[in-house]
Image (cartoon, rainbow, N blue to C red):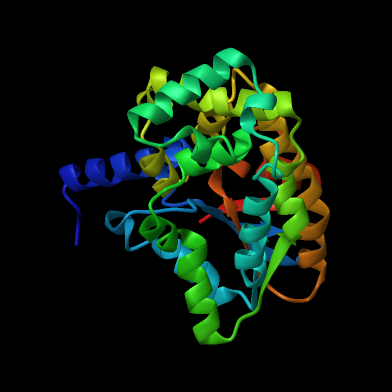
Length: 288
């Protein structure tokens, strides 16, 4: 049966679109298959640690990677999660007799006193906390949204399927991103939160849409841009950890098991992102 000229043209257009469009336009999610030079593979997934009910169902690639894997790895081991968080909060409280007032610029403290006063939070409550813990408290999502995060969804599936989960970082390493900050760095982190709030979020970029469509470069650049007034924090939070994780991810590739490694989506893109570092190590990267 002969095809009409219109059909031939339509098929040709589809072929041109499929082969000429940038890969980022066609990508459906933040999930990649990583294959080493000797043929071993694992899956790498970018996470939003907190999601809304409207973000479900997740892109199907997350379930495909989960079904293909025998083990999972998150940033930190969920078995240590509660104890790790308690340790973080404890480290974020000043010892008796000390307070925030002794560790930040007087102008910063005056601003915080006015800010919390507007929210009916007394000085004796907020002054107990180090700046980085105040930053965590103010920027924390609703607990319900955290329970809907990618890791929590996969953790529930892993428990039901009997698939073990490990962590790329120990509890101490995970918390050290904040607990290792100097007074000046911790103050800068908190001030960055207020500065960004004044500018408006993400320059109009919809981070959830970028995540759903696997736009790793947008996610990385926007996250890095949020620290443009404190660039060393981006190095601390993203770059240093990415470099520390690569040897562990390479060990997973050599383990004989198929891992699904799931970390914050902002860790994927950029010249020091996990995708670039793995490519530099000779791995083939395929976006699913």
